[in-house]
Image (tube, rainbow, N blue to C red; front, side):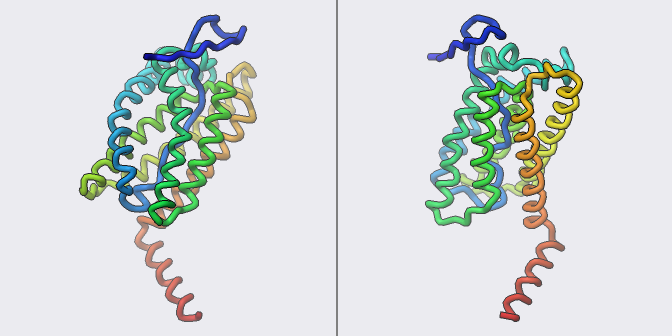
Length: 252
């Protein structure tokens, strides 16, 4: 049974519609960098792989259609409750917002499994939860960009986890990291263009508080992911780091 929520706002169409809004970001992002998933996360990766197809089909085509027929500015400024907050895309937007709560269990699984909990992992999960709910409350117009990117990256990422859960060791972990970094970069660019349109036309449906939070969040994610990727995959950096650690041990 499909449950819809009536939204009362004189500025919006007075009819029952699905709640929307928020932007993403990005998603459980770091596990390709911290090793294979724990057994408890295998079932979730399988279900997320299955759900990923539905999420993509309900959000990405909507965004692409708006881009093609109405232009880029429309996708970052037009009131969300009159566009992607309606219908199927509105349902999956609402589910995206609520999904940030169970994603915190990813962190719990790592702690319970006595795995190393890196700063990027818990920082991402806490900040994205807070930001998405703030975006939900302010009905951010650019939210479909972030949701679509997040769903796309999730679909690929959880398929990777699904394969590792089956015992395979895919050789494209670096590709997963690259698309995660790309997601953060595009997020920064969306914030930049939102600023351009907002300063030119105050009616652009994004609050300055939410815009500031989004920019800081995406820029910090981008920097942390780049640093982590270099630390993980760059041979020169890895050798230099090991050499530095050996010298420190000898001095001690």
